[in-house]
Each structure stands twice: as structure tokens, then as C-alpha cells.
Image (cartoon, rainbow, N blue to C red; front, side):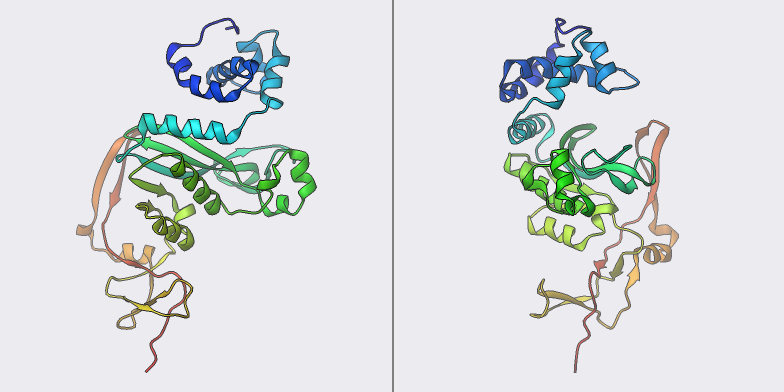
Length: 305
């Protein structure tokens, strides 16, 4: 495959609005070439083998496009949001919040550090990126990918500058805060969806769940088995001393239980088995139970007499 070869028609159509905001004619030319390389069945997709596959003898031009060519990220993000909305957005869409990790060697890549690496299932040297994906039925469209900067990077601004981290991003934000920023951004770009979903890595945060509620969003998130809950008999008491204005009051003095304990105590007839789709290793199935509880975040407040 060479630069002179035509792009498949659907890909050309999809890329046109992106190419318009890339500006210079050379950037518009090399964008589809690079993307073809990323989609090619190559064992290694670093620039050298990628260029040999899609643009033999033109490594320098492709390298310049990837490493030097400037474009406006906000404009590209806006185009991606519109394309995602057109393809899968709407009242039946789901916005998936997650993060992914890329194992890395060395210390120069932006955000690289020894931290939990999801793809390896252990702490390792890696980059972590917070992602948003818009999906409907079985069709997902990646929508956002923000690098997470550990505190060690924020404490070393010279390192940030050397790696090319923009000054506006040289501040520490948790993964939850990054996700919320991206949710706000794509909504401002017109992306619509029915529900936000996330795993327990995000659902374990009362602040994150509360922020979704404050934004008027419907959400379904995982929580760890250690999450404390009350039964629905627990009432709510407004207390001006609380920053949220609400504190849980056990009525009558009900002890908090972990989600794991609540599930363990459920009788067998409360559980049902369901299969939802066929995965790469066969049917995906699990046991489910539905039970209303009240989340017990924060400290307890005892009524005084």
C-alpha cells in the first residue's frame, strides 16, 4: 500500500470533517495514511514499521506529521463529538466511563509512572488514560481519551515542560475529575445519551456519583463489596453543619452493612441467572439480584434527645 492508493470510500467520508480542521494540505494528506497504518494487521505499530507498510520510502514525512504537525485539539474533539452523535448518539445511547493503561519503558512519556496497570493486572510502569465511549446496541465509538498525570509529574514542572504538557494541564486532577471534565465537554458539543455507566473504580467515589446526579444524569456504576449501605428504612435528616446539607440517620439505629454481606444474606430465590451476549470465549452469563438499599457514605449522625 502506498500514499497514492485510494482510501476506502466509507473511511474517506468519515475523515473529511476531520481533515477540514487539520488546516494545512500536508496534514490533510498524511492523516488518512497514518490511520490506515494504525488499522493494518501489523505486529508492531511504531512509526518505522508502520511507514514501511503504508508509505515505503517516506518515513520522514509521516514522522513529521505525527510528532511535529500542529493542529487544534479542541476542533478535532468537537468534530469527533459530532460524528459520534451522528452515528450512535441519542436517547438509547450509553456513555461508558473507563480508563486504560499502556505499559511503558523509561520515564519520558507523558504521565508514565509506577501505578496500577489494568492490562497487566498489577502495579507496573505505565501510562493511564481516562476514556469516554459512546455506544448504542453493540456499536461503540471512542469519544475522549485524557492522560492522567500522577502527583509526581505535577511536582516536577520541568519534566512536564520537557514532555510537552501544556501549561493549562499542569495541575493534579483525579481520574474522576478528568472524567467529569470530559463529560461536560462532550455534552457541550451536543452529545446525548440515556445513561452513564462506569465500573467500581469510579463508582466507589461518593463525590463522583454525586456530581453525576448534580448534572441531572442517570447513571449506573459498580461499587466494591466493601461499600456500606443501609436498608431503605433509613431516613434522611437535613443538617446545616453538613456540606451536602443531608446526613443519613439510622431509624431505628440500624447498623451499616457491606454490599458483600447484604448479598451473602439474600435467600437463593432472590437470585436469577442471565445470559446477555456471546463473547469471544462463549456465552457471557452471571447471577443477578435486585434489591433497593440506601448508600451509607460518610459518617453517621446520632440524634440527640
